[in-house]
Image (cartoon, rainbow, N blue to C red; front, side, top):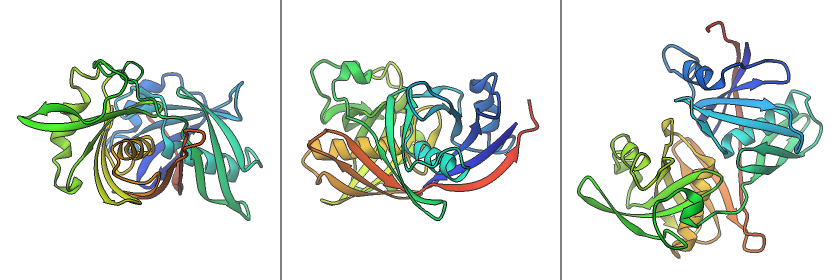
Length: 278
């Protein structure tokens, strides 16, 4: 089976073109291929598929084999892949995901894509629609006890669930210990992604992320969008920011008119390969 490894600011995935390849058991394939020492090594597996409702379809499987609803970094990679591999000549594309249809806008010159802008959709704030076991219409700075310490969480769904926590210094956080505790807390019946965020300025945020089903990753597009929404709701930043992640920077904007979050950033190839395993 042929595949391509790509990354969006360090959030790396194995992409399989399902117009040419067949993946019989994507959950197991993601588990096998994502392993760092026995597989390709990645944050997960992404299938590029046909769609009856959009130009292309995307399915995402985390490193543990669980299926995710949406990924901004993977969406940008697909935009670059389908354009540069001659699967489309359009620079404005639609992409079907488990979170709904997403719009991609490609910045292309001489057949190469340098950046991709993704319409990440509208944030969902109602805990019933985020899968957060709390009453009310919004989870904003809710106190949660973890390891004997109080953490104030804001919950946002950007196609998948996120728990955003503002801290003084994300680099000082023991993400490997705290991430699983938040992800698997009984408050989140479908588990959650976790973002530790610092406000640098009104127009700049810094973030580390623990991804549900994968662990700490160098970037998370939906997590960055959720962090922006949480920061705006808390009065901590403007609606347009640069997000500094471990793997690089994204530009994000929460449009007040249509309530959509827009994200712009690069996508890069790593290598093409052929999977010879099971």
